[in-house]
Image (cartoon, rainbow, N blue to C red; front, top):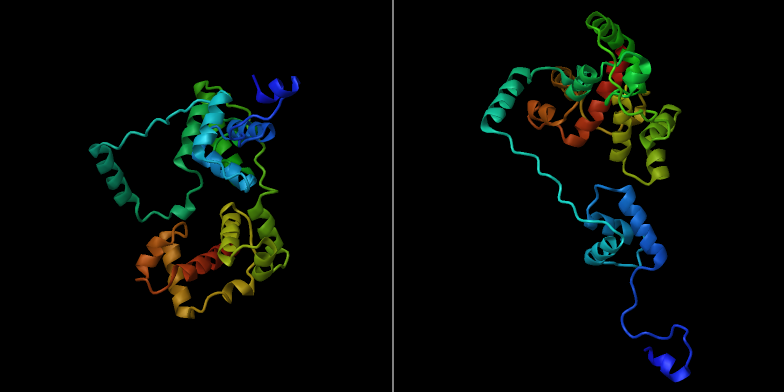
Length: 281
């Protein structure tokens, strides 16, 4: 019996010796919400998230695991991806050597997207949007061209579209990279964008590059050119390398130029190349 009950004869909860619980009922409910919304997260990741939300908490991963256990969650070890066999490795290297000169920047859809098209037989705009890798921009640019091939083939062979789970609306309107890029297109400078969003110039450039990669247009601002001090000859050499190797990755271009230009310069030149390339189109 509680000591306070013996002394006061009062059945109300009295003082209990021992360490108080770290998580209040409210925070414990929040922990459960985090676990439900992030099914693939580890207990370490959930602990970091919880400590970021409640800096004063400073909870340990072990305590998080104990509370998750009490909430009914159990530990699952993800299945490891099997290693490639020696034969598979040889085939991949051989394939890469054959296609290493291919301009990968001109690839419209990845293999995953094409495999899904072959598996689900999309025959309408709605079903095509459900395919992984098909967004609004590529749908506008290439959707009808692909449907013109898929639909007649399916009709000829009596194939019906295989239903896929209802697609979420693929709209990037409120994504940060779209907001930043449209602000830049409207006349904002790189400096004003870095100050407004409290990020580095490199982050803004990443947003602009992603906007371009999605098939959107970007203005050719003078402040982009002002970020680099490369000579016209160096810029021309970099543009030629991007044209030959594609602007997807910087490492091949860096190696081709013999390390004459830094990755920061190449990042800016890639942006200028992509803008000029789209303008020419």
